Image (cartoon, rainbow, N blue to C red; front, side, top):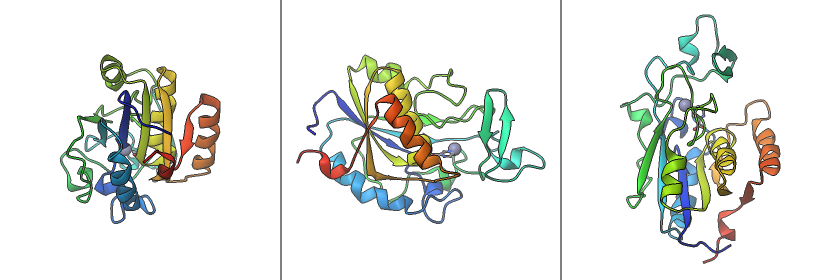
Length: 209
Ligand code: VGL
Ligand code: ZN
């Protein structure tokens, strides 16, 4: 697979709270970093995302009396998984992992900053209606195909890939540059959605040298 100049690499949420020792640690989360560094060399254009919640965010179990972490709650837009408090704006946990070195990145998109709406996708919040602006940005810059890497495969990477397709971009997930949370079969469910939506899944090594 050759990378061309209207391709963009989107690196999703490689933040301390999703890495070992973090508040919502994904198993092996930090292992994506060397893989991402290697593929990043192939790309002329790189965008980063950063999960960026208010302290009392509605996606936190702590914001719902009587609810436990990883349970579901009914919010205004539908069912929402309740997470441990994570990626609170300005905290160390919300910072990018210190090994991540993508100085060339052209844009950092923050998401999940509306207190009452979560945002897994880099394009639309979990109401599937509120746009982050990334779709317009990528279209205005003439990008046609997005490659996705980072955390977590079955949540923020996955929903970003599905929304990219919905907006008419080609979407390629770099599977070995991601790690999954895998909550109640979420990784397999997401892969079924990838097939339905026409999201390609490849390993980083399949990109041409
Ligand atoms: C994520 C759960 C909550 C992710 C973010 O980056 O995949 N997952 N917030
Ligand atoms: Zn979050």
